[in-house]
Image 1: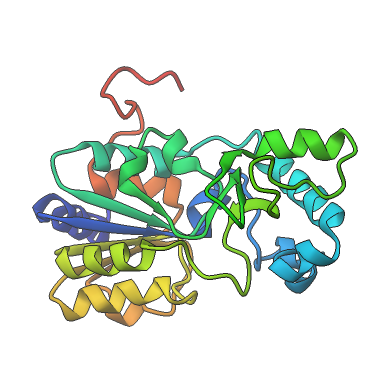
Image 2: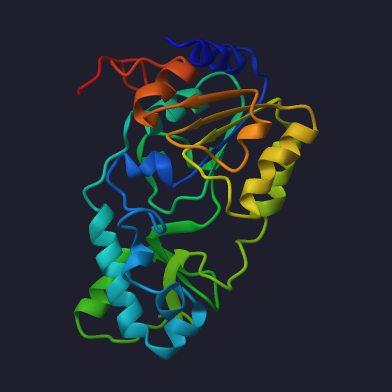
Length: 261
């Protein structure tokens, strides 16, 4: 164990309330493609053509085909040891909130209580109506698209359906930023994992927590925009080092039973 990993592990163990921020880096190790990195989704598609409300209104069939393609990319992706380590942390005795910028649902799949996860950009595993509260598994809508419905609308109110993700130009889901800000102010440790810390307003939770006295631990495979705020910076493969940082052995699952790996 390196000195930095040992220091990070001590801060996690001593914390009374933890907020975790995860970005694309943690899911990339599960095979989930990033948006902006090498081979990212925006290398072959322009955001304004697909990931905006206007794109849905202009060409819904193309957008739904794109979402079906994206859904296929993550269908076989499983949580990695980084996700499992954070699930174990959230199941422990220290109050923990996980704020994720990812839309793949892997934190919940890893065993984290959904009530402890803020999917601030939504999830590609669900569909929603823009006019009412209807939500369901996205496969319900994709089945309609595959059956020939080029522009599926809500069966309850007739409103426009879309993936339950936050598109460009769309507001974050009500209450999420308030919850994030409250958690950042109340925590005494913020753990930033796999995020470049360049996407706002979510990234602002790190300096906000630091201003209110929280220690900052950053775990990432490359430098971030907020490395200067870190009390401890751990560089390396997230799936390999995060378990050590949070005190979880990759040889055991989140419930403490023998691993089936």
